[in-house]
Amino acid sequence: MSPNAKKNIVYSIVLLGLVLIVYLYRSGTNSQASNEEVARKNGLISWKGEFMDQPYLFLYHPERTNVKAKLDSLLTHQAQLYLMDSPRSELYQLNRQDSLPRPSKDLLTLLRTVTQDSKNSESTWDPSSGVLYQGWSFSASRAVIKDSANIAALLENVGMSNFLLSDTLIQKAKAGLKINLLAYGQTIALAQVALLLEKEGIQNYFLQVGKHTLSKGVNERQELWKLKTQYPDSIGGAKEGWIALLNRAVASAGDFTQSYKQDSIRKAWVLDPRTGYPLNHGLLQTTVMAKTPKAAAILAESLLVRGWQEAIRIDSARKDIEMILIYNEKGKGLTLYSSPELKSFLSFPIQ
Image (cartoon, rainbow, N blue to C red; front, side):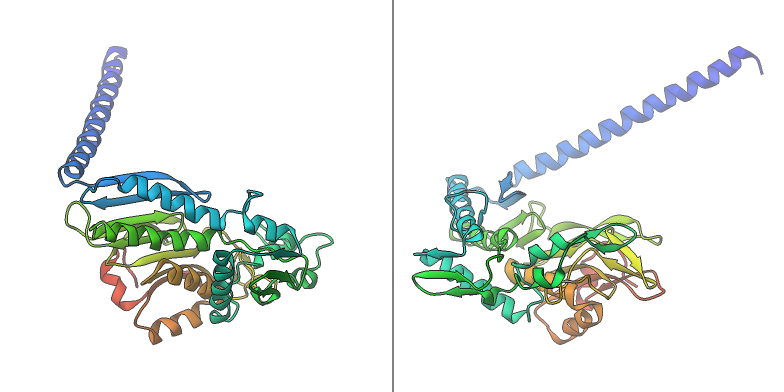
């Protein structure tokens, strides 16, 4: 073949590639423009921002005047209850002192509710357990206790029952007690936002803060709202799929891509708040659908600690929840489980 002929072939390939790139770009641009046009035509409102260290996305329709100002005011008020990095915050003071005199009624109500929620979960969910992670280091190959870490001593500083509550004083039974209510606060805020929208006559919304989602009604195309999720492929990699939501709150716990192998089983980078040690079963990730964001979030965390066998048993016994589990049995690969009634709402297959 002559040099000119080779050169012509190369030029043709390059030209074809450029044409393909332009075509794909225009297709994507047209598709995006089409989606935006449909959204505008149907009155979809979209707000984005950050709330308690997590991004939020609020979608709803139809439009109502002054809703954004009311949402901002609501989020500001909610954040004051749960933020821990401001010296003006009661939780900031409580985490740095042995006691808190003259606590507000809001804080007392909050801590009493949290204590009861932890008790109801049989301490498999405990927002005071973050101190345990100071004693451990996780990697793709193992979980190890850090040098000089005393797990038993750390465990003494865990437990909502160690906060002694009265109308005039909050006293710690252990000086090292600390509480993190950021995720809990996000779920409460979602419920409050939904209540505000419904008071404004808005019955179609999709609300998301971090790993917490709440939806009702349909989107601007008159379809069920859809939540993006990840599930494992045949070799354990992550693929993207969708969950169609029918008036549900959704929360996830764990991450199947973050695990280590021990005794022929993959284990999560998660500690049991009851023992202070890593989980011994193969449940790596939970996604729970429930009526309220708080219920979904607490159950997702609780099931992750309890294990996949207990989770499936609970799923069979309860009709008010649905779930997706990603787990690993000893000597086997990753398994994807879904509540039977949920399968028709998923964009990906469940064996």
